[in-house]
Length: 480
Image 1 (tube, rainbow, N blue to C red):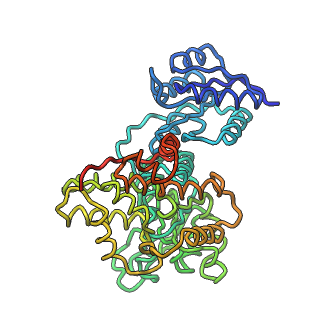
Image 2: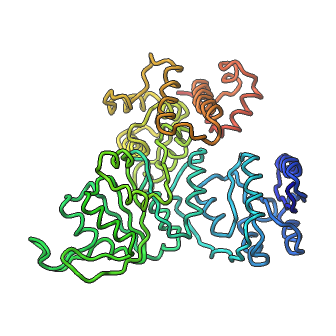
Image 3: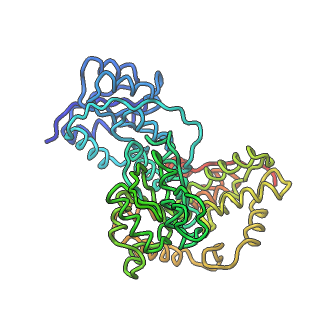
């Protein structure tokens, strides 16, 4: 049976009750409070073996309290919960010394597992990281897929571990690489990016490692390479799957020995860079084809991060649209908004170009159309003009729902096998059907929840509950 005293602080009585029951059943002693002042008094008096706290409380934000807790009791693990499920929430929790960040709603079994690990691990006595002020949010989205990525990134920020980012074109791989640099311990050093697919294959080694005067035809002076330029910072190797085999061999040697020689040079040069690689290709397939070194793959794939395509995180579309509209206005384009019907239409599109395609669409609509409100009909016109009719384009009206779900599941099992998603696959499919269904009903009724409930054939209270659970934005539209 587990033992330990858990201090829980949350101003939501229902959350406190649920946590009390779950932790007590797991064998822990639990003390509950609704405010930060009481939590701080308990911590100051030496109570508790672990803290679970919400970020927003009536009297003080947990991010203000955390540094004091870590100074007073650096060995006390603190788990932070928040309904403000953004990238910056995860980063701030990590910076201020939280043991773990959990977005609400959270899985109770996962929480109990985290509590057990926190109490069983050796105490490090690590002081809280220095507080930083970050105004720009580089990653957008509150979907479960993005929450998982935020938590991984937060754990990686104060490390130099090599990271491999995979994902389709346009999913934001360079944004993730920049976030790892800009919010990590190398943020004061340079961030240097090189795209393997954009450089002639016979010049890649010189681009990476530099060259001596006369090393090859046209080398009239010594040239610095990207490793030298990135010294003390981060080197982002984009489209690593396009790196020629000769350059792969030299890169492997650098990763193994921590030094390199320039093209035409003989003196080894020590390197101090963090490597972040990215690809939209299946490197394991390239290995089987003899096009990519398996030993290099394992050197680069220390921490793999998969970025989901936009079609797997359609609930993030409203937040992404709002972000891109804000950026467009900041760049001098007219202020616009999308009505509920247009947002629902965006969620029905398959987005073969992913987030990059969505951003380009928002900018194009903002720049080319005089209307202040982008409607579904306007959007349909633009999407039809830009669609090529390829499988990734607009959804065929004759396509049955069951056929689309079957294709989705076939893609899932092809890409993941029997790996368990979070939440379970049954809950995930239900959510991905419920979200657009309720959103479309609200769009069709212009935000009228009574009419939407009648249209769906559900109780109004059930609809309200689903809107809250799925975090659906209800936009009431009057007139045409």
